[in-house]
Image (cartoon, rainbow, N blue to C red; front, side, top):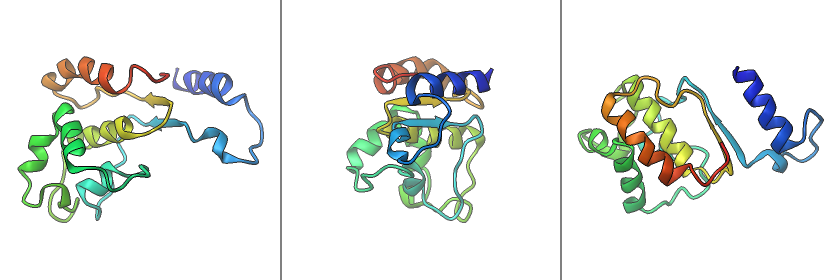
Length: 143
């Protein structure tokens, strides 16, 4: 199933299997795997902004996004908040790691965002909130 979805995206948005001379052609598609990719030794902020060009994002905007994804309270409970170093100062739950990945997807400028199992390891409160999250951050994109 996943392979056919990726192939459909490839065929319909990128133009099929061929050699690329200029990788700019594929920069507007982001794939977020079922298993979240979060890096130890980096701060929460660095993990959230991984792959985002504007690393100087306003604190208020980042806080709003974290609040929408029900991650703000988790961050503020950590001693160093956004500057908490993962793996050194704190270990995240699988649900928290997934939220980081989903926030990264929401902040991504990609026109096409592929979310693989976005509800995996999430609690009921988040699952109920996800419809609003989807409408606000992903509806206007291709998916």
